[in-house]
Amino acid sequence: MHVSQDLINQYLNYCIHQKNLDPKTVKAYRIDLRQFLNFVATDPLSPSKDILNNYISSLHQQYQPKSIKRKIASVKAFFQYLKYEDISKNNPFDKVNIRFREPKRLPRTIPFAVIEVFMTTMYKELQLSKTPLQRKYILRDIAAMELLFATGARISELCSLEFKDIDLSAQRILIWGKGAKERVLQISNPDVLKILHEYHVAFQNDISSTGWFFINRLHTRFSEESMRAMIRRYAKQADIPLHMTPHMFRHSVATLLLDAGVDIRYIQQILGHSSITTTQIYTHVSLAKQHSILLNNHPRNLMHIDDCHIPE
Image 1 (cartoon, helix red, strand yellow):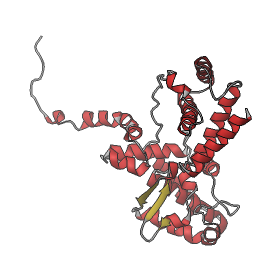
Image 2 (cartoon, one colour; image 1 turned 90 degrees about the vertical axis):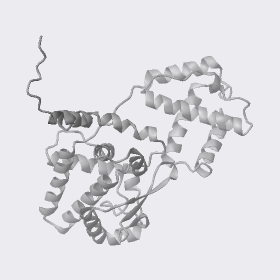
Image 3 (cartoon, one colour; image 1 turned 60 degrees about the horizontal axis):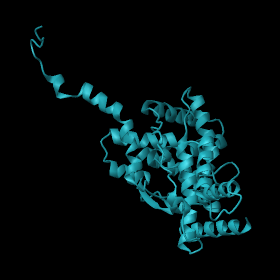
Image 4 (cartoon, helix red, strand yellow; image 1 turned 90 degrees about the horizontal axis):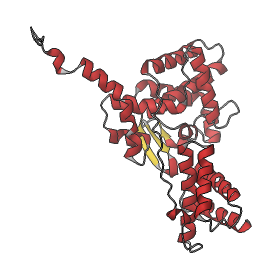
């Protein structure tokens, strides 16, 4: 058992220092591998086919298909590493059928009109702020939401932004995505730039001392959970019944860009997807837009035929 744990630690160090994986990804790997190790109590380095099938069956009883696929992929990658390092001769998962259907879940989006009401509420709160401190933090909230909507960034990417990654004069932002992959996005909307400038001036001391761009009330990094709570608070103030999450804003940006006719390859780059397949799920969401176009804009609607009744 201890030998296997040592090998897992060795593998995770490899993931951190050589594969340069995101810390959250490595944390998920650690959980998945520990879970596998606990299930396969005897001979964890050479599990039989029956044991692996039982392990996969146990996962199906506890988790959703997406989580199951990730957990199996984590363990399979670990055994592949052992094979590569000549620690193990074979990857036991190579002989196990792990294919199963995963139901396609369309991304949940926020209607544009709802986003507009949400943002309008935030700006109204800024106008009604009673103290400089209250105004300062509402300014932070608006700046964070404007940048979230402007870039379609993941919440983790936004909250981990450092000031050195943002060039307001060049209207450019460097985002570090999954697997430490970087992408540069342009911020061209004048209202967004204005609020970012105002926010930077208000928080300049904290930003300079910490290096983080978005700051909380404890004068350190604005956390993902704080941002989720902030969205819930303003949604309640705006009387929006929809449960809104930061990731829904990301989905909405992609869908709205696609509806506007932006090429899906550009959307892939903006969102930082490594595969176009991930981005293509938004084409399904746009079927409603397609229906509206065909219903209202099809050239058949321009035809005026005096007698189009078909005789019986």
